[in-house]
Image (cartoon, rainbow, N blue to C red; front, side, top):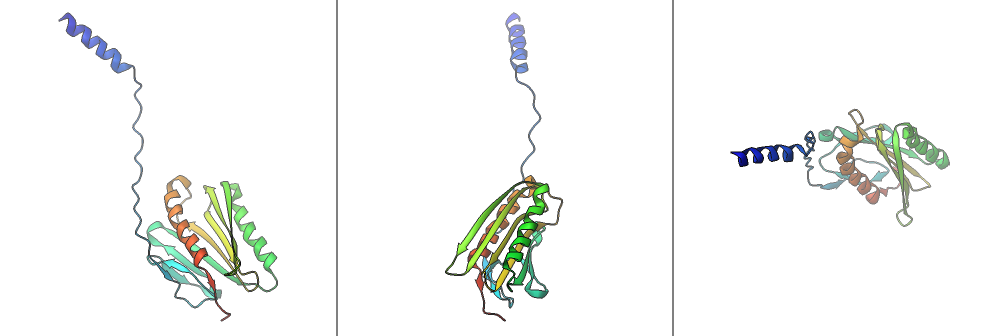
Length: 185
């Protein structure tokens, strides 16, 4: 009996040495469909690859919206012809990026230069609870200028939407890498 009592007391002391912590919250198990791309089917002064399971919304002035219905997100594409106003277009695009600096933790730029295909541009990753998490612009520097922004239709909570941002970022990089300028319509 004495040994049992000593065993019980030592068990209590051993068990009480570790602090009781709440269980961590579970992480979402997000699965995204396998990516398959197709060329943009709309008549535009440009073309590029788009993900097949997105919805393309045609807009005036050669603008368009690439919607991700399951992710509640879209890439908004604006097109402007370059008419001796390239500096103005670049300045406007960068102003829109840095408007998010108030909420952003960091803005990470990446430049794209492909003189052979006449692709010159920048992509900005915006971390933190900003309204847009990726913005980009691409030009041929003489005739065409495209600006794109990634938006989610939910309250910005960067930690929660980071996997979706990474998923869509691959599509934006593919868009830039496959971009081709067409002859004027």
